Amino acid sequence: MTGPTRGGGLRRGWHRASSSFDLRDATARTIASGPAVVQIVLAVAGAYAITHYALGHAIPLLAVTITISSLGLARDARPRRVLENAVGVLIGIALSEVLLMIVGKGLWQIALVLFVTLLVARFFSSSSAFAVAAATQSMLVMLLPDPDGGAFVRSIDGAVGGAVALLVTAVVPRDPVGLARYDARRLFDEVDHAFTALVSAVRTDDAPRADDALGRLRGTQPVLDDWSSTLESAQSIARLSPFLRSRLPDLRQQATVRRYVDLAVRNLRVVARRLDTQLGDGVDRSALADLLDSTARAVAVLGRSVHDVEQRPVAREALTAVARRLDPTVVLPGAPVTEAIVVLMMRPLLVDLLMATGLDHGEARARLARV
Image (cartoon, rainbow, N blue to C red; front, side):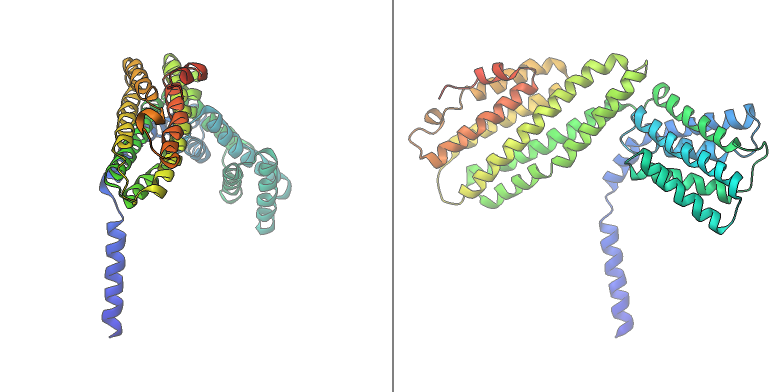
């Protein structure tokens, strides 16, 4: 009995592990990483060529490893982050080479160098990754054979690797504009699905469906955070790269849209939460469902305006049409306060969305219905 039970458990565990792998997500992740992979490969080739062929270093290991660790595959490829990573590992290399000359090699020397490097790295930066990178490189210095060429050859390799990584960030950027637009599409797709679920819930008086909508809206925060990080990285790279500098206005506009859509989604969560507590009582809320549906259609146009600037005035007018209806006495005549309050709660939501189209706060408020 024991053998079959174990085998069945293994098979079930393998099935769970296999079913958790999403081929579509894996493919999308691989494609999205393509520019970063190309950038890293070119940077490593450049760092190796400079240190090996130009400087004559036989095995420029640290030039290669610093280039890879400085660039990485993370979304945040800002020049400042690349520079911080490069400086972190250079501190580890230079400090360990100085200590190596003073105390030599051995077990207690390795422990001492690691201890000092971690403390110094933490002093210079609050980033734990900075300290780990510095410590890792210091251990390479302590454990690998001394290179030909004397002291600080490895520091020179590290400096070359860091400089090449920073240069490649500007000369061979990772298509940050495309990644920012991809994040925008992800966000607006999720918001559209949430709106669809919410409208359906209100039309059918289905509280569990409203729960689904609320869950989707809560799940948009990581996507919003990704979009924010990508935009910050893209703007930093565009300010440095001569090939992307012309895209700065578009990126700044995206940042404005992201900021106010973030606020709008937060307001929409409040609306969804309110509806979630009311549904299931048999009340006909078709008028409110129509209002939410009109808002969803306008938000979809706003999403398209991120990629097509000509859609921005269309989105503004569509949102204005919804804003002018946000009077409880018009949408829900004779309804109790508990129903009318949902319409009032949508007013700040529409203000945020209108500001995402480029209006200031006063202009956006002026487009709301008078109550």
